[in-house]
Image (tube, rainbow, N blue to C red):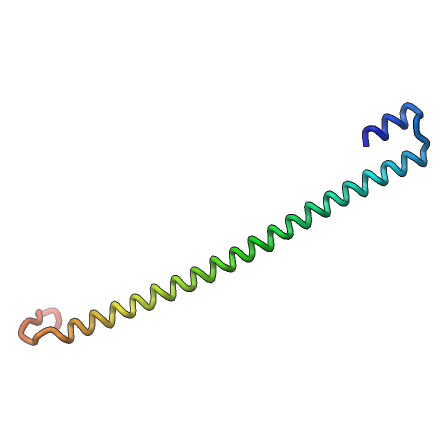
Length: 93
């Protein structure tokens, strides 16, 4: 871009050549911006997939914790139910 401006100021290129040079620079800039946009869109897709995976893992972990809590309650209840009658504490009645 700067080289085009220098050439114009020095009278090396014509107005038509200057317009072509600027158009080329604009096209290059648009291509770079499009590449950058595409890279960012791909990054967003990857991050969204990672977030979905993390949410799925969290759901599975919470489900597993719930199952473990239920198992603990069942085991605690069975343990209390199998104690001999003479060894029950007052609090259990």
